Each structure stands twice: as structure tokens, then as C-alpha cells.
Image (cartoon, rainbow, N blue to C red; front, side):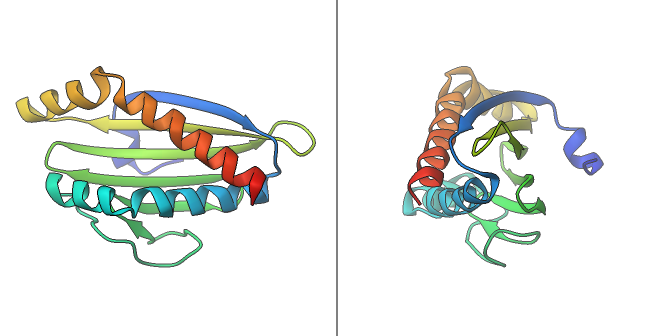
Length: 154
């Protein structure tokens, strides 16, 4: 399944959407949107501010094991099915898992699962600011929406 480091992380949340596109188009959309979203100047500054282990885009494209973007490293990529990202910074260790399934002819279900640990007092405060305010959920819904849009418009 997943490495112990990922399964040991507490479950935070899951989000899903159905995209009116096949798995190949959605897979390309995932890569395009993640690269654009997480490699933006704003995301790069944030990754530096919180001390992310990975602060730059690098490695193979399309995304594959070993690819990086600010805040994340690809630890597993099964083309058209699943992308597993991990990251860490001063306040958290985390994983973002994107799963893709067929949802009928020309339709795909895209799900995200977030797992994270927020150790110590600073981690608890960070969790409150990011998760407790609903900001993370809003970000995940926006990410899914952007991937859906990119997948259907090319």
C-alpha cells in the first residue's frame, strides 16, 4: 500500500469531484494544475517562509517519482490512477494523495486525501490556522475545480 511514514500520518480530510473527461485528460490536468499552483511565486515564498524541505520544482515532468515542487515531493505515481505527494516543514509533516477512477463513459472521479501531523505547540497552532479555519478545505475544493476545468478545456 503506502510507506509506513504515510500511513502513520493522521487522516485530515477527503474531497472528491466527478470530471467530464477520461482518465488521460484528468491525469494531464493534475500535472498541469499542480505545477502551476505549487510553483507560483506565492507558493514558492510560502514554502521558503515555513521552511519546506522541497522549495523548488524539479525532477521529471510529467510528474513521476522524484519530481518536486515547492512544498511537495512525488513518492509514487501510477499514471492515470494515483499520485502520492509528501512534504514537511517546521510545523507539519503531510501527504496529499490524489486518486483517479472511472465514473462512467468519458467521466472520471478524482479524490484527494490529506494526512498530516502537527507536532508541538507551534504545530497545533498551525493546524488551527490552516485546518480549523476551513482554509485547507477551500484550497482542496479549488484545486479539484481547477483540475476539472483544465481537464475539460485542454
